[in-house]
Length: 54
Image (cartoon, rainbow, N blue to C red; front, side, top):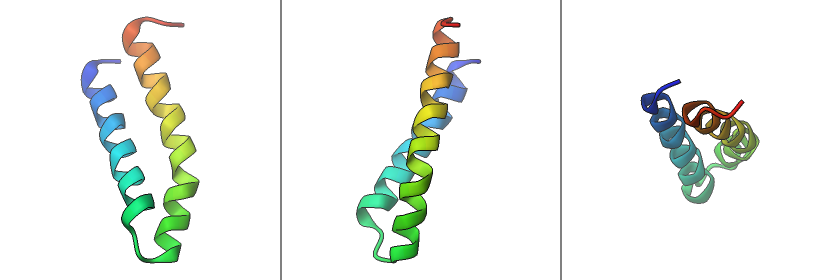
């Protein structure tokens, strides 16, 4: 996995976090809250793979 993959996950994390904080629609906030832990885990896995962690 390369740094571009980590960058993409970081961007997704930031967008979902912003949606969670700024969205006015309750359904959008709920979706962002549901997606956040999944994206966080994927971002961490991307970081681990990019750094060579097993």
